Image (cartoon, rainbow, N blue to C red; front, side, top):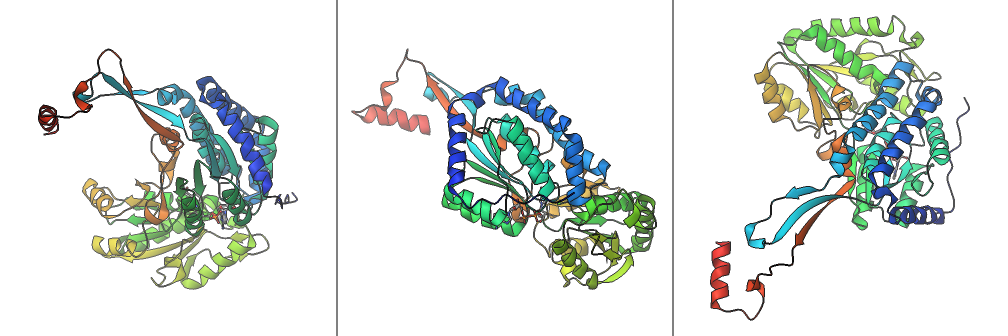
Amino acid sequence: MQAPQNQNTDNPGIYTEIYRRHRDFYESGKTQDHHFRASQLKLLRKVIKTHEREILGALHADLRKPEFEAFTSEIGLVYDEIAFALDHLKAWMKPQKITTPAVLFPTTSRIIPGSKGTVLIIAPWNYPVMLLLSPLVGAIAAGNTVFLKPSELAPHCAALMETLFAENFDPGYISVVNGDGAKVVSEMMDAITFDHIFFTGGTSVGKIIAQKAAKTLTPVTLELGGKSPAVVEADADITLAAKHIAWGRFFNAGQSCVSPDYVLVHRSQKQKFTDKICHFIREFWGENPQESESYGRIINHRRFDVLNDFLKDGNIIAGGQTDREDLYIAPTVVDHPSMESRLMKEEIFGPILPVIPFSDRAEAVSIIHRNPQPLAFYLFTQSDQTSDEYIRRIDFGGGCINNTMIHLASPHLPFGGVGSSGMGSYHGEQSFRTFSHYKSVMKTRAFYDNPLRYPPYNNRKTDIAQWVFD
Ligand code: NAD
């Protein structure tokens, strides 16, 4: 498939025009209606269903995604989010009655979920469909109009998204803006004051977005990356740990924000663990993973070169084969690289797994603390006491005990980072909350108006006030 060209525009005025359409649509009040929001969620599901084959084709063209991985992680997760939102939308939209202090009699209080207005959603290339559409579900549910900015590094998906939204949704409601992110996002943010920006991507671009958004006091959600550790304790089920870590690290050729970035293994289990992980690599992708239909590719040559450089950092005990032309890097295990190497200081974001032995919990925790707070944390242990201790001592976005990555598949669990791995969260109700502003409203009935607060004041009024606030 020929890669489509990015549609950069040399007319930044176009964004103001699109924004005007979005504001008119928003101010018409249409998005405030429950039926409208539900109908747009159903339309989104129908559009994806109708074009499933094209979406799978675009994901294959951009990342050589195996169909199973593409269907489950890019399409299935969005269907789940839509179904969950449709089931709960009425309840989420309902104003909540709140207690009012007796001294404010005769008033009643409610918290009313309101929309934010016109929002911008910026997606990365590694899950170029799901990370664009999953936040969109929340934005629709909460009654916003939406600018979508897909990643230019997954051009087939970006072009397909533009066509599907242009053909199926009102251009005043949802529009897709394609092009080079550094240029397009910067021009859009100069031209428009969005009511919320939802960004998924790397920490360095996240900082640029946050700085720019601060100038207009635009609230941001930042879904970023980082080095997510997996710890395999001495009492862990080693076979299970190796299987879950091999799956999590090499799914999508290691290009998942929540992929286990490196493994800390208790010294007593290290040999068994590395033997098992090599076993599962062979079992999942065969003797030559390059020939496996179940193994993806690196997104582009620039990322390939970065990852290829990482391979110089340690003793390779499995994999290590590369093919630049094919953007292929084998599932690779690196034995105990130096803590000062790039492998242990930068987010790897590819199919390379460093394995580092530790002797006790204090050493494992201190290795994790060498890097900023991770997006995800994985622990393999049979002991609740051990897992409680790790969870207390490590700051991380979210994670799993005795598993990897699957915590993001539940719409009941908010998903997001902490510190340099992000701010804010989404999925399920949390997506609705992220794209809503909650209005606190008091309603006063007219039959009684307490005269206490009005001038002229006197000692008696002051005494009563002191008694009330005491
Ligand atoms: P990126 O930060 O380079 O790009 C993300 C988006 O920002 C793209 O749409 C791009 O067009 C735009 N962009 C790029 N430069 C920009 C600039 N200067 N100003 C404004 N916008 C700009 O990220 P990426 O390489 O696409 O994705 C990889 C990173 O994303 C990894 O660090 C990974 O951990 C992280 N990630 C996080 C999550 C999460 O849910 N927390 C999910 C996927 C990926």
